[in-house]
Length: 485
Image (cartoon, helix red, strand yellow):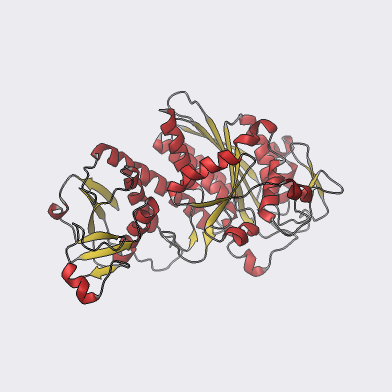
């Protein structure tokens, strides 16, 4: 599907169908052509209206905003995809007078058109080939065409990177093993000259004393890998940004076995690692001006005679001892060693992403990412900037009372708390123990357990993976890049 900006009046562009937005139920604006039919059909602009005879689709949006635009574009695509429609035209609806609107337009179409159907015996394909965007603007202001075209390109890169993450998360555990993740990372580096990739095997992990990572892997037939991707910009970088991703390609819960219903969808436990890999992919294509790293901890958490056990004590790479009280709290163990290693890269900004706690889903709902960390100002600024991506986020604060709950009687800390409440926060506090003092004000932990994988379609997201964390972080990096200019 090609999306093209045309410097032409909407009425002079030929297409099979025209899409028109109705903003705030204002059904009399200059692009509306079917006012007479609105009365007949009792249409007030608060919903969508498909007029097959007129070859026009009206999409009702409450107000203009980046995410409202994404949702509208997705609705346009999904309403018309099953018809014999090859081309669609739409005018411009610029929000806040910024060309970022065009980035949102492309994201809406590309994200909304995603499908994971490789295991379907009969997969229907949309006939939509081209989307034409007219420079005719809703507010009457003239569009800066070159900047708008750059925004279209950025939107395509960001949305495709998100879909890249979705593909990996949606892939079944039989296929997507830790080795598969390593091969995908190597393939990505081979494709982009400004990306390097190193894959570290079990021997390296043992040499580095990454005992927590190794302990989680022990019962799996698939070897663990730590994957390090590095993007280097053309010019000297002023910042080094490091992402760390949890890459549990499957999580059974270990000996603290999950119920059958909870085990289903656990292929999604690699979402953090796939998001980090997708960010590196997009960074290379966007040519961001920062040195960006992704450190991925890839393993399975399985059961067997050699499985690690509740009551075990692990000496992590950092030297901190951890009492295992629940083997299903394994992601934080993998991250503990990966975060410790990643800090040797001397990051200016350190962000980890993980489908870490069910408590986050309970507390914030299925659609919202939890942001944790010690620096409240950093989290607030991150949320302010990244929210333009459309990803929903909520900040959770640390407190000393909950910090007491992860202390152990027989080790330095425990991998679960002594209270059943505040599980997302206590998991973040556990990870904080492995963040060096000099990095604590520049660190954010993103618990993406809610939106990473949902078993029903929502917004412009389909059943399954959403690529949680990809767009938010890329919008944040783009904002940093604008500050550098």
